[in-house]
Length: 381
Image 1 (cartoon, rainbow, N blue to C red):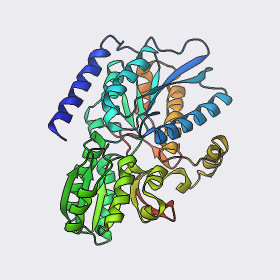
Image 2 (cartoon, helix red, strand yellow):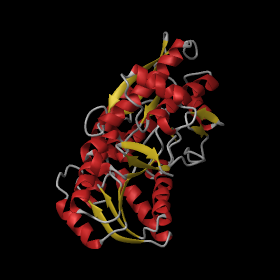
Image 3 (cartoon, rainbow, N blue to C red):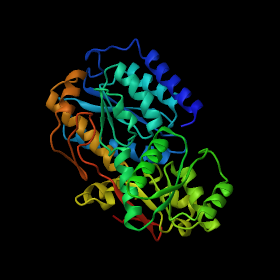
C-alpha cells in the first residue's frame, strides 16, 4: 500500500475511535425498548459497489421478514437501521457513529474491508457486536476485537484457492494487479506468497487507480511479459474495464478476479464475449449451493426475478445467526450477545456451518473458483 494511503487509513482509524469515545462500554443502553429490537446494517448502498450492497440488504430484509412473521425474537420484532458506508473509510466512520447514536444492539454487514476496518473500531469502542458477512481482509482479525465476528473466509484462503487453481492448470508465470484498497492489496500480497510457495513466478505486481478507465499501457506491458495467468484483486467497476481491454489487447493466459469483482456487473461492463472464461475466486452464490433452492426461489419472487448476489446467502446467514445468538443469550445485553456468538456451535446456514476460531473467524474456509460460461457464472472447482 502506498505511504499516503497508509497514513490516510491510520488517520481515519484514530478519528473513528475519537468520535466514538463517548459511547458506552457497557451492555446497557441498547435500543430494544417497546416491541422492537434495532439492528444496524452497514453496507455500500451508493457508489461503485452499490449493486452488491443492495443484494446483501435484500437478503437481510428477507431474513427479518421471516423472523418477524414467525413471532420475532425475545417477544419483539427486528427492525433494521441502514447506514451507507459507500465503501469509503471516512463515510464508514460517519455511518458507524450514526448507528452507535441510534443505540443498535448489534451490526450485520461489512462489504469492503477498507471501510469495515475503521467502522469496526467504532463499534468495538461502543461494545457493539458486529457480524461481517463479506469483508475478509486478514487485517480485520488482527485487531483482536471481541466484538467482531467474520462469517466469510479470509483473504489468505482465497489467495490460496486462486494460486492452487493456476498451479493445477500449469500456469506458472503470474501477473498480479491490485487497486491499493485494504482488501485488494491484502489479497494481492497473499496471492503473491501462495503462487511463489507453489513454485510459480510473479512476473508483474502492479497497482492501479480504481477510478481509471484506460488500462492500455498496463495491458501493453502485460502482453510483452506473456503471463500464463493474471489475477486482479480489486473491485468489478475497474475489473470489468480491465478485462475488456485485456481481451482487446490480446494478452496471453487466463484472467482471474477476486470476490470483490464477483458480480454480474463485471460481465455487463466487460461484455459477454470478453467475459467468457473469466475466473473468480469466491464463495459460490446461492444458485450453486445444494439446499438453497427455496431461498433462491423466494429471493427471485420478492425482487422481481433478480437472482441472489454473491454475498446474499452470507448476509441471510448473518442475520439469522444474530437472531440465534439473541435467543441463546435470552437478552439484548451486548456482552451476553458477544458470548453467545463466540459459543456458536454448528450453526447451519445456507451453504455453510458456522463455528468460530479463537480469532472469531470461520473454522473452515468456503472459497471456490467460479468461471463465466455463456454470460453466466458456473462452478469451476
